[in-house]
Length: 161
Image (cartoon, rainbow, N blue to C red; front, side):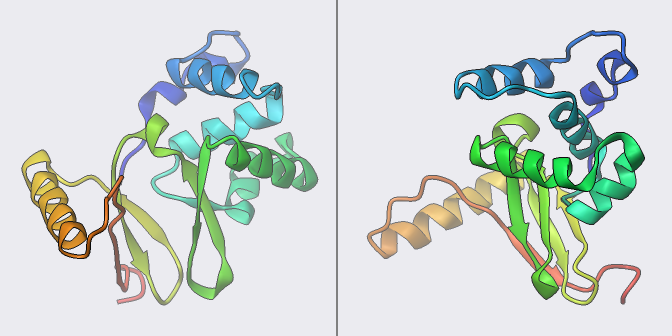
């Protein structure tokens, strides 16, 4: 599990200070002629503070009355289309969202098959090298050119076990 600490900054307290993540998101959206609205900033902040991917309902609970449900769904759609957030289609048809890897860093997931919770797992560098080598070997043996990889381990979380 991880929290991206740079998002818990003054910019979310109304002081107008922009974080590195905010700057990168704003540049990405601006390059697509999309505004970085208050609602979108709040969604990015909530995802940055989350311990793993969050559903729209969970984000709405996190944000309270700050972002109406309709704005939340529009924001998620715009942010997904711009490649700022990544969707994860999980158990029971629930889609959860997290910051895209270019913002949050490379990581993997533990997926609970019972409740659908998804937790981030950062693999130690030495072990990540081994995973990458396995991916490259499997791909090469199949004549496939890998660009990246995602590891999702399915099982039961501590609450459901």
